[in-house]
Image (cartoon, rainbow, N blue to C red; front, side, top):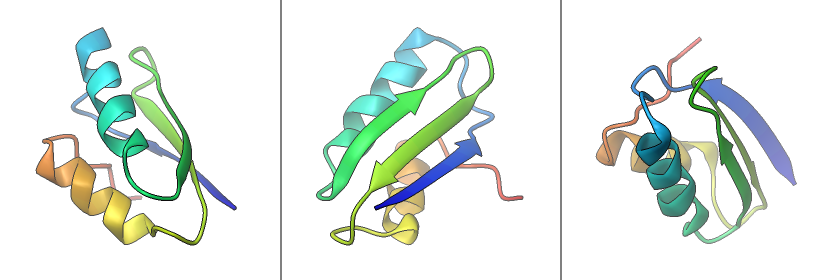
Amino acid sequence: MTTKTFTVPAINCSHCTHTIELEVGELAGVQRVTADEETKEVTVEWDGSTSWDAIKELLSEIDFPPEEA
C-alpha cells in the first residue's frame, strides 16, 4: 500500500474537495482519498492496481493538478 500527501492549489471550496474525493476514489486500487479545503492538501492511499502517474493524470484532467515539489 502506498500513501501520498500533496498540495492542490486549485482547491477553493467544499465542492472542490468533494469532486477530488469522488473522482480519485473511483480509480481502481484507490483505498482512501481525503481532501482538505483549508490546507489544500490531499492524501491518497492506493495499492498496486494504480500508480501515482495515473492519479496525477486524473487530477489534471479534472482541473485539480497537484503541485510539484
